[in-house]
Image (cartoon, rainbow, N blue to C red; front, side, top):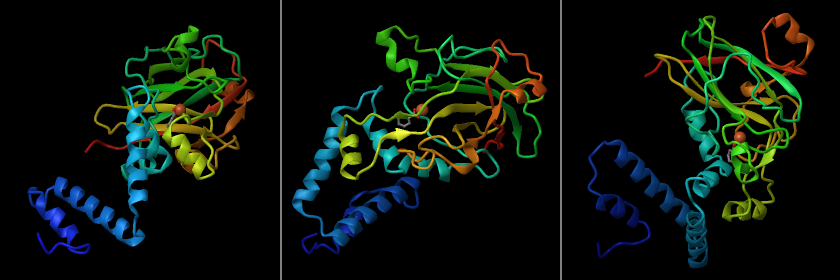
Length: 287
Ligand code: BEZ
Ligand code: FE
């Protein structure tokens, strides 16, 4: 390797790893080395820029905990998370979108028609829809797990020190035999992703804001089908066209209908809604 130079180093680094030929690991590792080296050569990266980048990653690591994962946030604001979601959405299924940091895998089971808002202030909305396969066949046993921010744009889990119950504004529903689900909740508000760390510094350096449009989070599962993790947004809401983490897709934007629509639906609910949101989820077969 004595004759190594800025053009031969890429192959030398790849060859130094004794990876299984043709393996996925080799493909990803070689691709990463190729792109990183091409980027460095194309931009003639200086020592100062190289060290600045490494210090930025170091700073991200300094505040990365299970609750505050700065590297995932970095992936989100760079559109990396969204790109992975897009690539991995199955044909015919509802498009995937951000999981975000506030999911809990042990949310309480709730009855269809119940109210998730626990007496919180805000506009009461009926959320309803169907869970089907791509041929519109209802999926028996489909389960919908939802979580969201309140009408001030805060997730209860963020305010446990102020006495909020972290399980508020979330629940798991089993769809009925026609694949239908319905519940009422409070209309969430936009909120910012955390911007007091290195990722916030990056946003400010690029003259970007940290806001996300109001949304509802979902994981939808059904036996034999690939589960989906996604979000539902609302038409004409603030930040719908410039989500800080690129989670919005046209197909994930729901209309807000007036309350009178609820009457015709005939669903029994614990609370009277002031608006109605309809969103259907489509799952594709596993594998
Ligand atoms: C969220 O939607 O909850 C979220 C997504 C990305 C970063 C921060 C929050
Ligand atoms: Fe969220």
